[in-house]
Amino acid sequence: MTFRIHVTGAAADAVASVVPQLVADKVASGITAQDPALWGPDAEAEASKRLGWTEAVAISRPLVAEIVALREELHARGVDHIVLGGMGGSSLAPEVITRTAEAELTVLDSTDPGQVLAALRDRLDRTAVVISSKSGSTLETDSQKRIYEKWFRDAGIDPTERIVIVTDPGSPLDQSAREAGYRVFNADPNVGGRYSALTAFGLVPSGLAGVDIAELLDEAEATSIELAVDREDNPGLVLGAAIAGTNPLKDKLGIVSDGTHIVGFADWAEQLIAESTGKEGTGLLPVVLDKLAPELDFKPADLQVVRLVANAEAHHLFPADRHEGEILVSGSLGAQLLVWEYAVAVAGRLLGINPFDQPDVEAAKVAARALLDDRPEAAAP
Image 1 (spheres, helix red, strand yellow):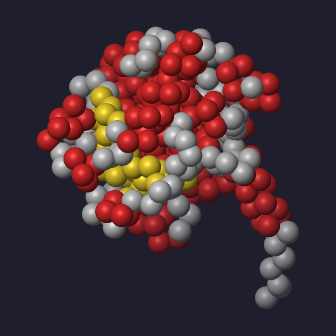
Image 2 (spheres, rainbow, N blue to C red):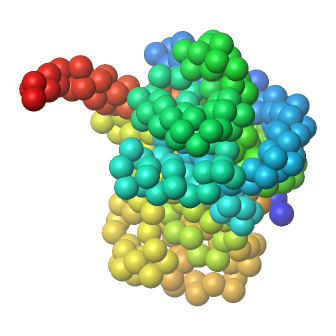
């Protein structure tokens, strides 16, 4: 099932007015060719090292056999419970992939003591842990790794046989993990965390949990052909124009799961859009809405609704008055992941911002570290 999209109202007007220029500017082929100039001179340096996701399918193919072999090795030792320790983009995509495939994955994306303790007490003797950190220096993920190391050792289990590392090559975590003897999967360093669904960050935990990751890549590859062509029916251009090309801009984006077979996709899309477009005083504000949310009845003027449905081509079966002005999308999970990544890159160009940096995220990390470094010394007993 490839990607399908149906637009009406202001979204349709945006597609009609914006997409022809995107085609003339060769934006689709430019993204595929990893042209960093598409987002202006200020973004060029960052974009030049953040477009690896456009070739994620080809780069990730060799990982499939290695991941499957490790899964079989773990199963042979009675290890069939996978825990993912990661934050943000490192955890959202695997959660969507495994939930959609009905594969069990325990996602530990919190330092809340109660959640951590619950995970530690859950089948430790049958557990393998995937520690995912692009930078290799994320404090929360490092703390998760350390506590699992302790619990494995206390249980008489060698942590190097149960902990798998996913990180960028050359990161602090990459270096220390290899020195300690851990199994390490390197991801493409030219892919930002929120664009990493089809890289090792998405595939390793999902594959170890039992998902057919080769099929996921097949789905994305089938759609990548459409995304690379400068045509007015290119789904990445159409979706990008529909969410970011309305005039005046509908800067609130309500994402509704309504019949789609993909579980939790709206949460992944919300993070991708928010972190990519929310900067420089502009951008889109994505909000996950329930299909019975009151906003869908009165629809504020600045709200653009994206409805994730089972089949967007069956739009004629939907009540016309209820879905007028909405964007209806459907498709396989692999296709959806790649189309939305293209669409958000297109949205960044239309909004005049860099969709690949995250200044406020980095600022928040710096502030958090400063608070921890400045904490008062514990009083002597």
